[in-house]
Length: 439
Image (tube, rainbow, N blue to C red):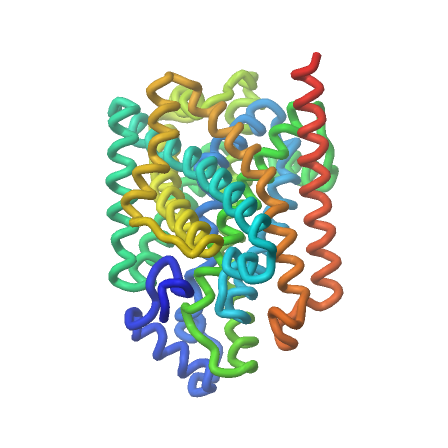
């Protein structure tokens, strides 16, 4: 397998146990449906899903819940459904073509367009890494009292060690990332038990989608940017492109069916965590008259007197797990973006070092970490169309993806509606933001 078409974590030669079992399943030697049959195909979506519960989600969901209660929980639910559709299309592209999305754009777009797409994707990746890196540093600070700057340095070291698992094949890295996701989900199960949310009010908010004011639209855009993540649209296609290579059309279809299960389970967990963040903030802060809580640090400090010391510790643990895992995934996405668009690679330690710098500058300047996280998520939401529109075009073309996995008309229409909704929300947000500046 060449460097140009290799996955961000080398899948060839390694993980042979998983590959051999998957071959038996694809060849029909294991016919009975079981967890053992599904397990070899589960993993890529869990890697991608970690980006959907990164510290940017903490910032936007806490602010949304504290300021507006359960009002915006419908945005999380809708965004999660969108994420399932988008990630399934991204996985499909990798399975059907053996190429990731940046590589496919490079093959079919004019060179100036490719360079523009690469630059904006790198900006999105840096905004992503800023949020994830700051979140992990905050986690170390809140849990252990480590100075924020040195907590940032420690974050860089730990994430580099996590990325070092790539040398042992795809399974160890998938296992560690999945373990982080399990820790985050478990933390929020405990938080919900402590908060005891009003299920009736949550149901009303889900069934009556609405906004309150311009700030609620800003937070909705942040939630969208933090849930439909552009960098993992690029990444997921890379995670599936050479992981288990189909030998024929029937095997490709079967791999894709298993990948849909992977997406639904992984994104379902991520959606639960996101909703739990907002519900926790709404139940703890908004409905107790503490709607002024607008930062991760304030949330941590306020949880102790409201719910007891265990709540704040559990919150910090989930934040740390989120920051470390999503930062590693963000660095992987950055590698895919550079390699795919311009056929270049830099050592992963150098990319980790470069992407650390903006976060360390934010820390050194004393900027508000939570506000920085929210703004970074808005930047992400503007990057979504540049990843989503090409993905939709390519997966709808038989000449690129083949007859066996090309989108049907319903999928194309549905994905087009999703793209139109996202783009419309971003245009409205840009208009409102510029109007405020002009005033």
